[in-house]
Image 1 (tube, rainbow, N blue to C red):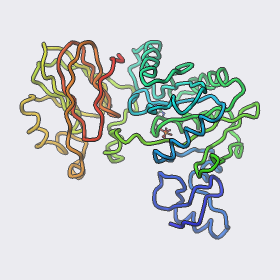
Image 2 (cartoon, rainbow, N blue to C red):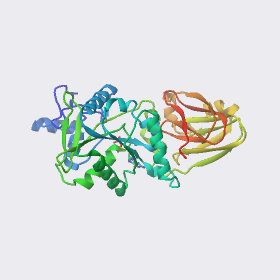
Image 3 (cartoon, rainbow, N blue to C red):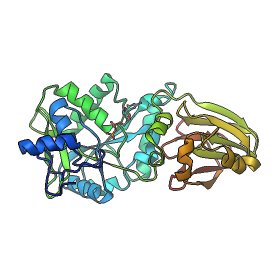
Image 4 (cartoon, rainbow, N blue to C red):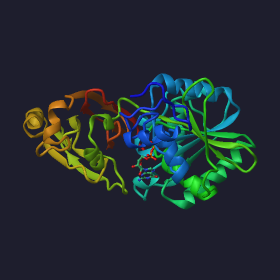
Length: 369
Ligand code: GDP
């Protein structure tokens, strides 16, 4: 790594090791840049040449600094979250950082949820969850970044609420923020070089500014990783299995107390106590669910993880964290959420336990569906 060099687009120190972090430049591009005296990091390069925004990730401290700066501006905040992973994509304490700025909450990836689910119900649910974490959004909007009509609607809402101000788009990584912004660029600009990058004052964090009609900007900010998401324990191949890309087909299980479901080898759900009842699993269609007896479940897992119970794949089991148990006493219809993986809806009062790899959260929440 060359400590001296900085990207002339965003000012981030150039590094050649980690493609997912600020300032990454492939070695070949670095050599070329050194010859011409102009080095762009890959992110700025792609942005200049292809109008294509790439993800970068920030440390927690950098992210907090960024949020603080946004708090000092007078702007509309567009907070993008992944509706399939609300708990994993909400920014803790966002409301404390952004001052009095209005928030438009965008629940993205709505195409993943069953089409039968009413949008009004989902919006209301999202609003309630936002209130629980202290966020009082001006409005809540559901989008699929892949659908042009949704982008259109998003732009309309932004116009409605920004009232002549700048717009800051914030979100944790993987919620689809880049996909949304790229779609916005395609709809609004489509011309090269209309996008500029600049720095947050006093930092090396770059922001991408997309000009709006009245001289104001829509600003894309880098994302932050939520450490407790399942994604951090999985390889790229596994993520293709666990992250749903299509509409989820809910799977219904009639279980007696003393039965267990395994979500691949990634998580486990025990029906501990209660009358025979139904449980509905909302996970990627590609995750295989296995049913077994609770009393044998631990042995079963030992024996079959990496085999019958995949992911993790056989070469990953050595590094895969042990499963940790969380018990829940359920009174009303509740989702037991495995951060980033999906959830199981419990329909009647009973006692259940959810197990997830150490470091990954299992939480309860009011049922979405
Ligand atoms: P960012 O880290 O927030 O910028 O997220 P990306 O834009 O890179 O998207 C992360 C992943 O989610 C990619 O695999 C996208 O293809 C996918 N994605 C983004 N938006 C949507 C959406 O609306 N629906 C679905 N099904 N997938 C999406």
